[in-house]
Amino acid sequence: MSKATGQTKNNALWFLDTLSARFPEAKIELNYHKKDPWQLLVAVVLSAQATDKKVNEVTPALFKAFKNVQAFAQATPQAVEPYVHSLGFFRNKSKSIVGAARMIVEQFGGRLPRERALLEQIPGVGAKSAAVIIANAFGEPAIAVDTHVGRVARRLGLTKEKDPSKVEAELTALWPRDRLIEAHHVLIWHGRRICFARKPACSTCPVNGRCPRVGVTTFS
Ligand code: SF4
Image 1 (cartoon, helix red, strand yellow):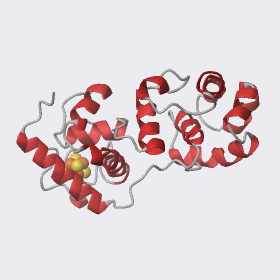
Image 2 (image 1 turned 180 degrees about the vertical axis):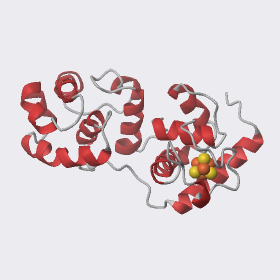
Image 3 (image 1 turned 90 degrees about the vertical axis):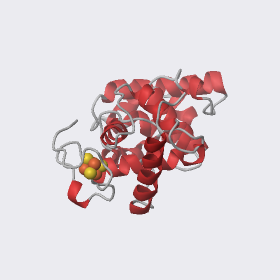
Image 4 (image 1 turned 90 degrees about the horizontal axis):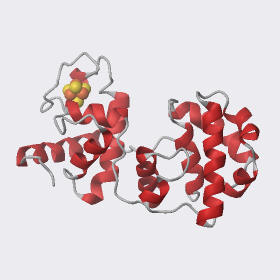
């Protein structure tokens, strides 16, 4: 059950409305074929410790070489590595992607499961990645808590938690279910464009009037 006060919920709605007005185009910044959730899973696995921009640079050639989940399942990790070697942890990521493809083909008939718990069993897919996938590929309400979402939510006074699953539980209780995906995107966009980890641009921030941490200069 949410521990949020009415004031926190009021603020949360105002923050969401204001940030959505500032970033009406906020959406996932990883490129993938919108009708192919498998491509989203690959991009999400590749995005660990890498920028979306870097991932978007490698995925076109990767998806040209391996056209679908079956092609990845039949590949070896070593065959995938040359396409992703510019990203960190490319050996582990290649192994995860091929392992994920094999599991999806062998256990799920070649289709990504829509259930979050099943997604989390797939190699390379943790809680955050599963939330990103169900929200973006299947439209299921979920707030994936990455470094930006956690930092911005704490600065805005929406949570004091640091553990991503606890942050997610608290944020999920603050907004209507049909606005959770929107909240996820605008918090990330805000964290990437204004509320930077170091030296956030508080003077031009659209929510500085109610932000309890306005003027913060450190990572916290
Ligand atoms: S006022 Fe500063 S700390 Fe608060 S949300 Fe805006 S940029 Fe972030």
